[in-house]
Image 1 (cartoon, rainbow, N blue to C red):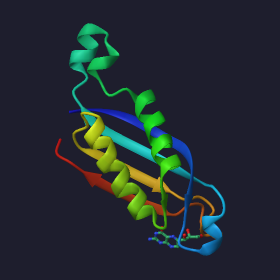
Image 2: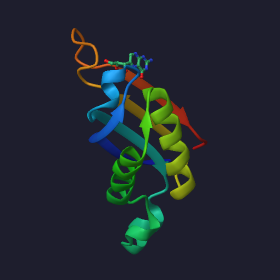
Image 3: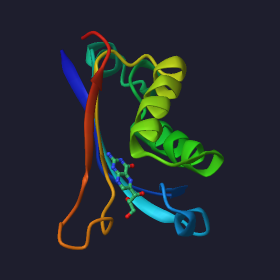
Image 4: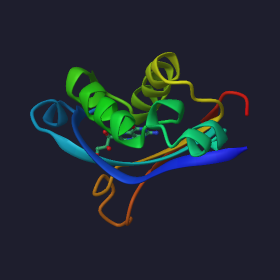
Length: 117
Ligand SMILES: Nc1nc2c(c(=O)[nH]1)N=C([C@H](O)[C@@H](O)CO)CN2
């Protein structure tokens, strides 16, 4: 299976478990790896036959604009639910980083994998 990826996508959103985090936007950094078969698009040179990484990136920022979660776990799970409903994504691996959340760490976050290849 082939893979379309988006690396280090910076999205701004309201997220966090503490009261002060409800009052400002913070940046998350997202990596996505989405399995797909690129051969139909390659054979026809047609973006409509593949996973359009520009459209998916735009949808992710829109999702981040319209939600305010406490946990990055909720953000990740609901984001993948949304993307998998709207795009023909097979197996997907998502890493969400919240830079600066732990001062002594370069980054903290999670990785989840959903769907079949
Ligand atoms: N597993 C998680 N732990 C923590 C989260 C989270 O989303 N998932 N969030 C926080 C706070 O919002 C923190 O990022 C503020 O700096 C703490 N732990």
